[in-house]
Amino acid sequence: MKVTTELFLEYLNFYKNRNKSDRTISILKQNFSKFIKYTHYYHGELEVKDITQKLIEEYRTELAETLAPKQSIYYGKNRFLSPKTVQMRIQAVKNFLHFTNYIYNEGLDYRTIDIPKIKNFHINFLEEDEIQKLLEIINQIEVSLIGRARSKLLVVLGYTTGLRLSELLNLQVSDVLGGKKIIKGKGGKERLIFFTPKTQTILKEYLHALQEPSPQTGRVIERKVVEEWVFISHNAYNFGGQLSKESVCGLFKKYNEKLNLPGKRITCHSLRHSFATRLLDKNINLREIQELMGHEDLKTTERYTHIRSNQLESAHNQAFGDF
Image 1 (cartoon, one colour):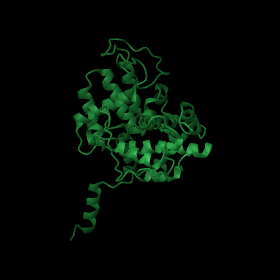
Image 2 (cartoon, one colour):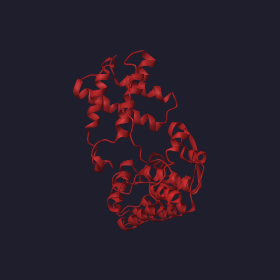
Image 3 (tube, one colour):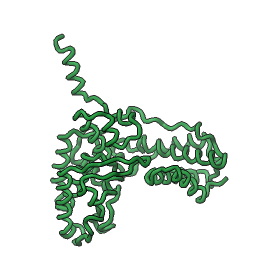
Image 4 (cartoon, one colour):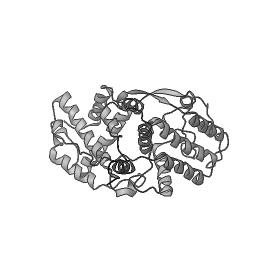
């Protein structure tokens, strides 16, 4: 059986019908497309029977030697694809075989495919004073009021809500001004998000700034305030449209270079980690943090119960300071 466009679409629909989110479907589509592109380049037209353990091992090797895109925030770290990216690429192949096994009783048994584990999981988070430094950097770098207000809003919203990047970019003005919103996250899990008065104030500053011509284009963005996206593009390309993930990554990369925090990277996900860490610091219980983060499994939330080195030193001194 050939891996045709029709079969590929059927594969995506298989997971849509199992209540996978649009984001999950998009990730599956993107990552399995990469696998098809690889096999076409090296082996020609792909059939389901061609997806063997040997081919998958070859693909793993290829991924391990693939450079990260220059626009990626991971490019400056080790220059290669992140372990998470490699993991998702292999998972997409495994999911495809799960589909062909189940629907057509064809292909390699998907259960025999090992998914690479990410070793030494490290939670990249920012302290409160580092968040303040980041906001100061934004004030220094962003010379226009419109750019400054948008970036500050992006940081404060990410830090005070724990929203994922895709969730942030899908926010509408009325959501934030309303003070709270139920959103649907990973796996279709719903959760309640709260927006602080400070966040609402920064949003209003941003909306006021939007009444002035954009510094990049000299044009004014026309919008019905309560109906449009919170984060919009200011430049000539996609002017007034929804801000892209690539644009956000570019902003964070710029701030990373200026802020230069050893061992840390500013990303939307590091703001999410910082949100969870602050909740723990304020002695919020894990079940409540799980709900605010939208985690399906409490074990995922438990990863955030890391103890910082200064807390370890304090505990050690308390126990052995007299010796």
